[in-house]
Length: 319
Ligand SMILES: Cc1cc2nc3c(=O)[nH]c(=O)nc-3n(C[C@H](O)[C@H](O)[C@H](O)COP(=O)(O)O)c2cc1C
Image (cartoon, rainbow, N blue to C red):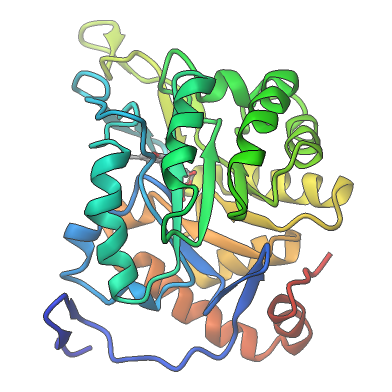
C-alpha cells in the first residue's frame, strides 16, 4: 500500500482499482456493491485515507431541516462484539449539506445517497423538498433511529404512520427513494410492505437494535440517553435474517443489506440472502478504510461466482 495524492481533494492510500463487478439499485448503477452506512462516514476525515468515489455509494449522515445538536455525552460505549451509540442524529442541517458535503462528494465523482432525518412528518417533508432536485443520486429516509424521542423509529415501527409519511414524500421528488427499516419490530415484513406499497423504490436494513449498558460501580446507565443503538459484528445475523425475510415476501424490491459487515465474506452472505448491495457501518469507526477493503475483498470473491455477479450487474438478486 503506497500513499499517492491523485488530486488536491484527497489522499489515496490505495492504488487505483479497476472494479470488475457492479450492481444496480433502483436503476442507479454502483461501481461495486459496497457503500458506507449513514452516520459512520465523514468525508472531511475519510478523504485523508482513500478516494471515497471508489465506493459503490457514499451514504451520508442524516440531515434535518435545521442543525441538530444530538444527545448529551457520553453517547457511545461498547458491548460484546458491538458498539452502542446514542448520538441522536447530530448534524449541521440540510442547507449546510447542500453547500458543503454534497458538492464536495459530487465533485470527486461519488455516487451519493442523502440520508433524511426528522422528528415529525413536516421535518421529513422540509428536507425532501430541499433535496428534491439536488445532485444526490438517491435519498434514504431514516425511519429507524432508536435515539430520538420523536420521528425516527416511532414511524418505522408503525406501518400506518409510515404509509402516511410516504404518501407525503413520494410526490415530492422523482429521485429513487430508499426507506431504511428498523429491526426493532416483531415482523419486519410489515413496514417493508407498507413502504413499498406507498412508493419506496428500495429498502435498506437494518438500522441499530435498541440496547443498553450499565455502569456496575454506580448502577446507572453508561450513556446519557440511557438506551442506544447496537451495531457491529454482533448484529450480523439479525441483518441477514431481515434481508432474507423481506426478500421472501417482496421478490422484486431492491434491498441494501446493512449490519455487522467487516469483511468481503460477510458482504457476500448478505448478497446470498437476497440483497442487491450492502453498506458498511461501525467497522469504519475503528478502521476508516473498512468500506473500501470490504469492496476489494468482495470484488475478488465475485470472480468465482459469475452467476451471482451477472445477476447483480443486471439489477437482479440471488434469491
Ligand atoms: C455512530 C452511528 C451513527 C449512526 N447514524 C445514522 C444516521 O444518521 N442515519 C441512519 O440511517 N443510520 C445511522 N446509523 C446506523 C448505521 O447506518 C447502520 O444502519 C447500523 O450501524 C448497522 O450497521 P453496522 O453494524 O455495520 O454498523 C448510525 C450508526 C452508528 C454506529
